[in-house]
Length: 160
Image (tube, rainbow, N blue to C red; front, side, top):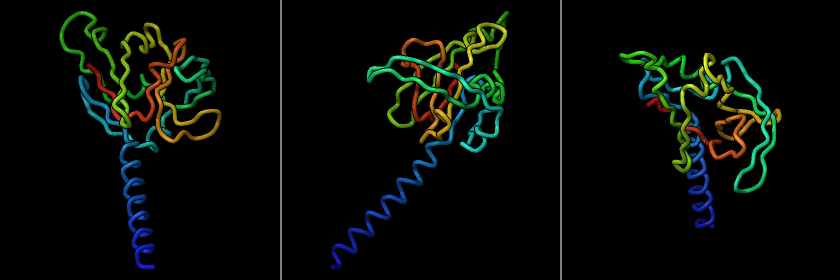
């Protein structure tokens, strides 16, 4: 009896620890070549103006299709402020590396892809798919035929 109770207690404590780590991992850190490095919580992301994008993309595990809702990546970068440095059109030299907290998977975008003055692609950090909350934040890049830049469990966004 004692062994069963002890095992249940240990399992419960491990679950609580895992839940606490999961909540911490959901915060997103924006850093690199920015004026104001940020750490954003899921609640802060949801408070930003929502954008909905519909995608149909292939993955290595089959097709992904759906309507995603989230905050524009451009808005997040704007909150942190780009540190442009000297030179004509210095801002065009930036790339943005988005990394997963789960497995370290990363994908890169050029600033010109998301800048509204240029391509203006509506890349979002999604928190919902088809009206249901996602377990973690996901980078959604509409227009990509393959979802290879669809980073799941986004932990960091680094402007380079």
